[in-house]
Length: 479
Ligand SMILES: *Cc1c(COP(=O)(O)O)cnc(C)c1O
Image (tube, rainbow, N blue to C red; front, side, top):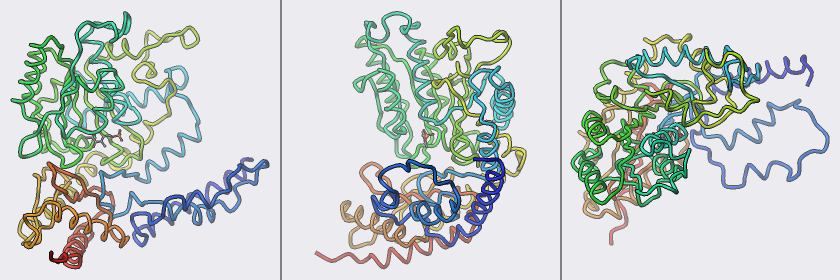
């Protein structure tokens, strides 16, 4: 592609993105596409000769847009958000335009040094002490895998340099609640702990980890000759944003010499507001922390922040030092390739830098507070409306609810179908997008309020729609 074509098409696509964002609210939030529908629009074989990108905007409209769920839509209340502020769109454009590899300091000093500075800004924004150093990773799943690998290597005094886990005489165990994100069992399995040594403990009435069960599990494992290795505290679980008792977990971690990893993937962004930091009181005692600015803070996917206390340990576990990567400045600089799993690294820090430059800390705080207060408004509506039930505390921006019509109130199976029908009907309308989850055998509707353009009127409209639909799919046929 020649430069003039790039310039012309580039401007065209920026205009296309801006027009898309402007009309987003008029589009159905959840894609109504059926399986295979999008793939069918493409030829089965690649073109042998380039056809160029002329008319690519119309092709995007025709081929791609019907298969897009609009994650930045003001009526996106599903899962957790994946906000992608304009500042990130521009940053990603610059990242791709530079096309630089940031695996080592020397391969682009700016990529390393801007990452160091903005991760230190982020550390300050979260109220973390200088005991923590941060690095950007692709996702929380990867960061949690890193944490578990570091835990494994600490407990085994670097089994990877000997016979690995396969040569260990006593098995290592990992602890979390049964509400832990799927990335935790996945990470534990990938790190070789084995499912039999993963303790996913039942939770309390607020869906948080029970410290008594944790200590009992640790003691039982020790008694039976196993070695407790890692525990994961969820600050904001995915189903209901439940908050594990971090301070008490930290005491047990210290007492039994267990690695403490904090998974604050969603809730971590709220820690920019000092008044929410009670949620992770004890965090200073953690060995590692993960949060996803690509969820709530506004940086486009993917940008995960991984903070660790012992950088040297991380580098010892992750580092490689082949002759072809050595440079003269290695002793004075950070080579971030040694702070995680992949060798190659995109210039991701631009997104976080641009976001903070655009808004400043105060505006980010204001938006987080707005989302939490919108969720608290909705929680109040649920609490005061007849036949609606809230199934979990609402400390953040997620409301867990269900509709309980009196004639089926004792029938879990019917309630589950009824609430799934409410969600399906709402989503099919295209006006809103919510998701469901199962909590202690009860189907819940999850309303996550954290899309950047969401305002009060959108949450009010959602509540009205939920009520209307609950009446239209109720009453169920009587037996
Ligand atoms: C979303 C989420 C994750 C996983 O995030 P990825 O970045 O997609 O891997 C992990 N833990 C919690 C609590 C989450 O909400």
